[in-house]
Length: 53
Image (cartoon, rainbow, N blue to C red; front, side, top):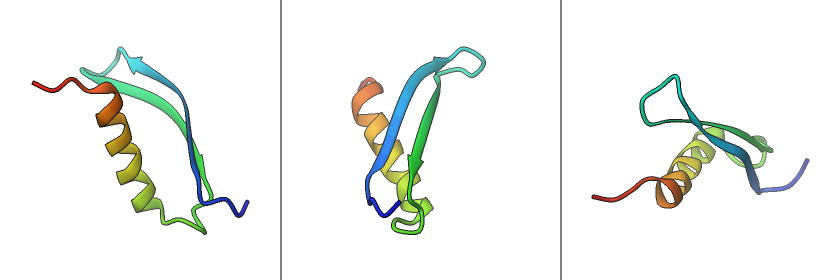
């Protein structure tokens, strides 16, 4: 509580969805808006896990 960080863990491929991922994510959404968290997580996953091409 009271931490502006967002923690993401257990990132894995989701075999039930084409190009899908499953993950565990937690943050203090009273300190940081939930929509902003979703955008930042998507950007981070895109940079780390999606191939460019």
